[in-house]
Length: 285
Ligand SMILES: O=c1ccn([C@H]2C[C@H](O)[C@@H](CO)O2)c(=O)[nH]1
Ligand SMILES: [Zn+2]
Image (cartoon, rainbow, N blue to C red; front, top):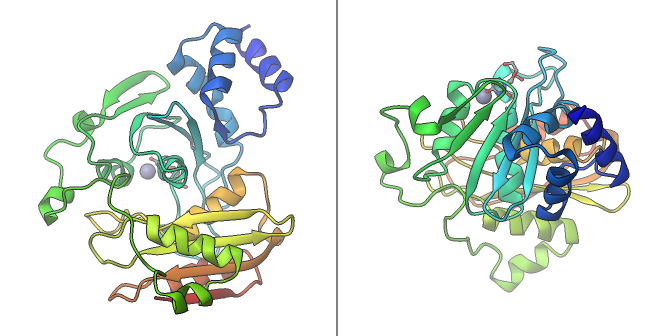
């Protein structure tokens, strides 16, 4: 009954294909379905799961990150054929990365269709928030209950969180701006400046220009435990799938990154090359 009301309301408001819900959308859905917030978010998870790319596991995970602004950001897992399993993007990462791209500074809750794995718990710990609620189909937890005695940013002397570190200043010299004249390249530059790379200082951003002129963006989000870090190309491709595009719609691809001991370009190009013949243009600043 409730699910029918949800389906109808999504259709009425043309929200079925949407991967980000405004506070107004959410209010409309809450009213029409008479569901509570958590129940509504759980009922919306299949929309996220539909966007999963799971050629290896066939296991679709959907997540929604609720931002402090009241926006709801969908995320889904993404696996890539021909690459190691470690290249997979988890649904929780996709949802929080999505919120990061819209400059959220705080995540209220993460709703997810399967219990978050250790890698995702570690990824979410990088938010450095005093509390984060995780809502599962049959239960809910606070992150610190699921990750006691955590290793995190503080162990490496880092006081900011993943969504509230100071912006970078790459491209402030005129000559650097000129190199990044292209709109998509400028967008990758903006993402690099908004990225979070306190451990390597390798700020990095990606922009994918699509055949309809839209740009899918990605930014690098590092982790104190290093391995759960989210690469900028992973996030850009996740956005592409969430928005209902396919990789053959990519016309140009850019990465802008800071010169540092750690580099994103090769891994980003390798990931892109599994899905698209477009070459990755690189600007190192
Ligand atoms: O917390 C989790 C656990 C697993 N997965 C994905 C990763 C992989 O694509 C598939 C099987 O592990 O499920 C997630 O998205 N989140
Ligand atoms: Zn996970």
